Length: 76
Image 1 (tube, rainbow, N blue to C red):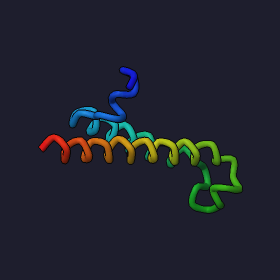
Image 2 (cartoon, rainbow, N blue to C red; image 1 turned 60 degrees about the vertical axis):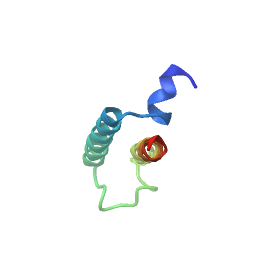
Image 3 (cartoon, one colour; image 1 turned 120 degrees about the vertical axis):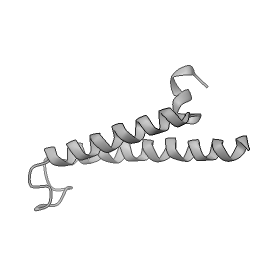
Image 4 (cartoon, one colour; image 1 turned 90 degrees about the vertical axis):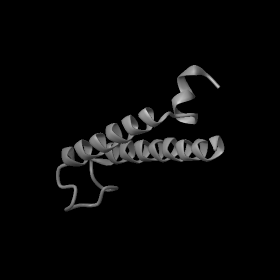
């Protein structure tokens, strides 16, 4: 494990809270930046790149949160 990926595989409570806040803020801002988000399909619009960024950020957030709770259960 490299030092750069330690926060993903073994996050502390502070790191998990920080990633949750950054993720939520980023998703809200990217959603607001998409014009006509609710009027047209995401896959047909020019907003596909923002949709992919939201998807990747959400997957990363799920991994960090899962690893945090997995490590909490093994520490007991």
